[in-house]
Length: 328
Image (cartoon, rainbow, N blue to C red; front, side, top):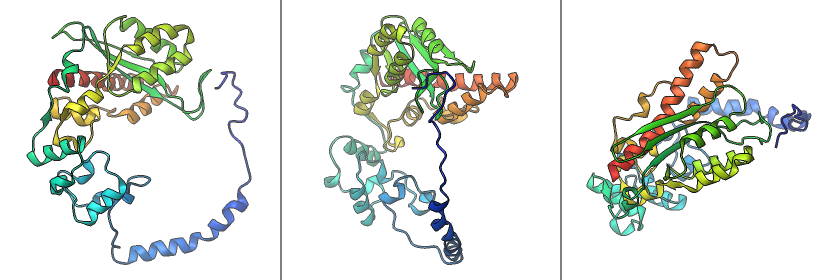
């Protein structure tokens, strides 16, 4: 990890790559001519398949793939070879898959919901949501990780929490909110950790969506070893509700995804991330944070960025509250 002493020796190494680029550089004119020939000709035919997202989604995917309400890619754990086989047979919609070919488990539920056009709910599987003890603490972190470590004890790309939101249900029907956002530009870990420990109490489940918050707390332990015991105690209280929702709920509008942003519109459509101003996802939150701590950002703009960050992170925890309420 970086010692925080301003010594970045060895982080960057300069090397002469002139000879290495000589051969590909000579091939550029031919490559340009080939590209121009393709543009001048008719649209080439390309078979759709798993290759369209390997290693990344092709920007022409929406152009080449047939538009369908329930694409076959909604099926969970659909391997590349199986996907290519289905597409070669003209099966592009989940509903076109013969019943005998639908895998058991989550895929079967996705297929049934798409065919029926309505959600599936397994009340027994969702029992764990109803049995969450009070008080309940719904927690979400926002983190930043830079290639160049910016504080002592950090490593490249290490995610460091700079913000959290905590919706608290002390009792049924009662909802409180606490939040923390450090835009001082200094190492945010300690201020974030101390504020969270003060707000999260010592008992009651910490409700989270996936294991990301547990990993964030582990990171705070490494950065604030004197707070390790209290942070680990909070980590041990975390309850990941994603597996519970995955087992007990599916709506065809989710298109095979159980991300909070896919589940939420089917249960609480009034909480629309697209209506948030400025910050609507984690990547945008990171960009807003970097702008907020930039000394060149004026006070008025910094205030706007802070408000956008607080609203976005607050919606993440409120989303969990609404999901638990709806499925309970």
